Amino acid sequence: MEKIFAVITSMNPDLSLLEKVINSCQKQVDEIIIVDNNSHQETKIALRAIEKKFLGFANLIWKSEDNGLAASLNSGAQIAIERGAIWILTLDDDSIPANDMVAVMLKSYKSLPKKDQERVGLITPNLTTPKGLGYPDGAPKVCGVGGTTAGQMVKTSILPRVGFWNEGLFIDGVDGEFCCRVWQHGFKTLLVPKAVIYTRPGHPTMKKIFWKTAMVPNYAPYRYYYMVRNFTYLHIRNFRSYVLHNNYWFRALRTLIFPRPLIKMMLFEDNRRKKLRAVRRGFWDGIHGRLGRMPENI
Image (cartoon, rainbow, N blue to C red; front, top):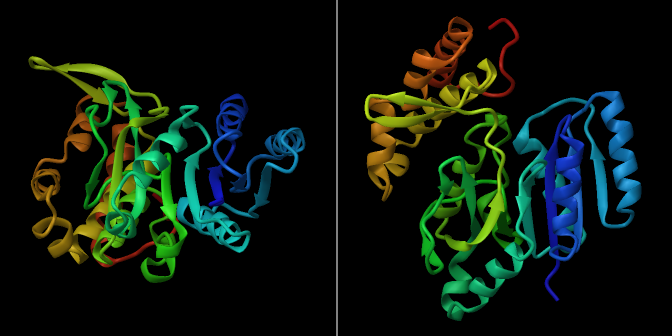
């Protein structure tokens, strides 16, 4: 029986949502590793109670400081591998897998010819968005690059070749960079549209732009810093693979020329001055290759 471990990254989570995530995983994975990035003390007490409630199934790993999404994934993944995991299911603390998500993904994987199974390094589900499902319904598809950390299954046997998640990126872009690296090493992603994970998009609002309705994300300033810095850093240094040799090169090029999230932020969001400072510093740091935690003086 192939062991499946879930790794959940968490910091000051919505505890009721986290319990729903754990409940939805109980019949889908062998064990959950929750990596806490130094939550508030009262939250830690509540997390210990949750660990006790799911004793032997949900296990907490404590971090003394917030080192970012990638570092948390790496800590959890290394423990999962030590305990014999064949697959690692990566999850956010507020993204709830459908009760059959893992079963549907594995069934699709096992229905592939043996040769295709060997090429697949990642299995990714469909995810909900404010506009509906992220991918159109349809048959499973082996593709080049795709997926996010919410609900993605990673075959542990690829990690010695591909490497783990890039801790320098901290948050935004961690999943995209990892997926691209998996592809660069010759592995494929199996997209399974009928496997669904229910994601929480933050606090978006819908606004009218001419004849269209646009989703405005309303991110905090720090998110704009990491988004711009990591996008700039990765696309400058990997222009050939991220743009020229990417089947979705036109999307990357369009984002470089016409960054819609930033335009929507400038048109509709509050606290624009601070967000624009974060964007400018993110762009500067991305060009100069400064990674890690965002500077405090932004």
